[in-house]
Length: 245
Image: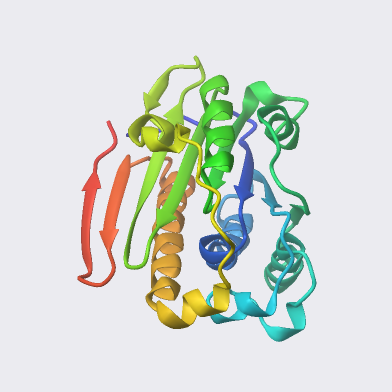
């Protein structure tokens, strides 16, 4: 499915979540922005990271952090490290996503009519997904890519609404109605224990990030969406993709 980008080719990329999947996605996107700064100089791209959590020692087992990051905000670490490495401007918002209005403010721009928005959902809770889905339903010129995974498997869902506000590709909230169910409150379990007992999650997170990046890469370099929903099974190296359009 071809996507027509209207001048002045301004993009707002907002990523919610910089932990498991999100932490592996940031360096991939930063490298792409570095490439596009030479390959497509007429593109103006804003990249914003949103995460309210600080790095804990337990995160080092599975997420893309190092011991020196402990105690610092996850979005801040990612923005500074990879923005600096690739000399690209990465902004960060060190707080949790609270509402649709909150997300709307983060993704706002004075010339929004000529702006194409790209929203990454890299979260492990349905509350944030509901906020992103509701925002998506109200927006125009937006691609919403949501990644979710379990121990071995997961899915990446691509939603798209065009300039007229028509939903061309449904988002995760349409395909997986369980996100509207309230999550049960369970006692917090140490992430380090989870990682040591299920180290495959490291591979599942990185794999999900690679698939999200692949979709973004095709979108920005070839102006095309070629996937609407992709399921993966990391243990068996199996994939099932639904084509867009």
